[in-house]
Length: 557
Image (cartoon, rainbow, N blue to C red; front, side, top):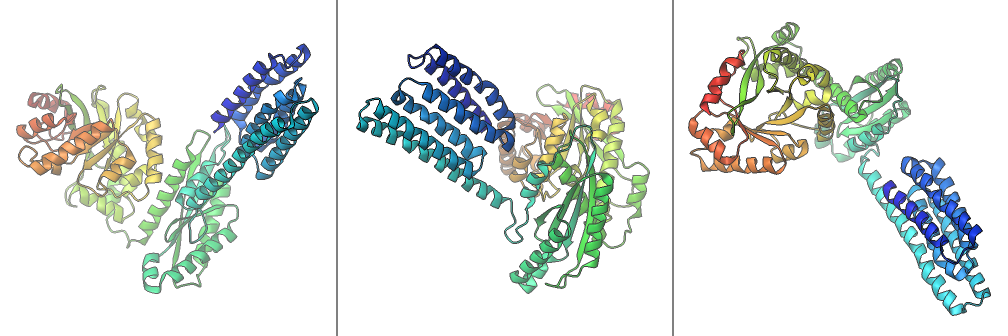
């Protein structure tokens, strides 16, 4: 919008200069017109930089009115100056978008008054009245355009505002919360803290089913009033049906004090609308002027919700998980990923290997989630993978597996920095991990991409959300799960699925990796279907010494 207005202002300046060259102006008048026209350049720059700042918008409207009016009345022929009133209408368009409705009305009234005065002067100069009236009426219809524009802008503003509000509580929804937090101003050189308190109504969905929607609405209204009255300095939002968030930005001590007050309020309050328990967990993230505040918000929301989930679980009994984290995390092995066209090892996927006696890898992560230790366990595995990757060749990438929960709740960049300095790093999100908040995940992934990391969706075809997850994540790498790849040489259904996903990857500009290649026939099918890279036991098993298996994989291709 600012670019459009900037262009209009420059065109108005050019129109003034060319009009000043006409016989309508003497030398002195031309100098006045030229100077006024040239001042549109710094005016345009101010509009581009500060267009929505009221301190600049109203002075610009006044300045433009004065300049255009002086030029109009400097013309020798008021009748020839009449079309110039359109320039005042352009200023009205600016007022309609950037200033208030009252300023727009005043601007249109001023333009109409100038039109009437120039019309009277034209008749006084001997121009036929019917001709003056015809031109004046034609120009007067231009007044309708800014009015219609203002109505449309107000309609879109209301529609946008409604889309950012929860219809039951009237509070901001998650989308509105992101927008509100994005307007936080963090001064350069000042480190502040973003804090979020997540208030959860336990068993809200079951209560709504048992007692009815009217009761659930009463619960939401009571909780909303409780939080907004108690914390007028917070941004309060309803982020889930039974979940509310209070967000503060300030010094670490101030934010900590407010979060403690939120927890104390929740612990001491009993809702009247229904017998329901409330819990409150909180999280903080340091932010500075370089931080994407919406990413920081996503981290605090996820971390607080994760703590809430952990608190709801029975007493922790899986001590082996905590002990493993204390020891530095699981052991790491690497499996090669090879280029189909050249046979060269392009990278290695880091895989976790756990001590025996407590089940499979999946069992360990389930135990960690039950104890509220999913994020610490994943981060320990990533740190181990980065440390172990130091012996890999610098011309290959490193792929690490991380859940969507951990990506949103933590900042992976400092952990992966060491590896990213010397090689490409790919963050793989497994499709087995259910994504509940694509807005927060998208912001976190954009942050990782900005830092030079690549994003991969792992196990495509074996998880929850299928194509929606692919569309929302916009991966740089797409990995077909072994359950799809296995048997593509003999199973027409699997071959069709693999072909469709490969075509999809090519269409979005992503690299396509076929996992689980175990036979030469599957490898040949992957090549014929257009796979970019392949991975599987035929090409190299996971090993702690990946260099030894490199030549074996190349020989297989």
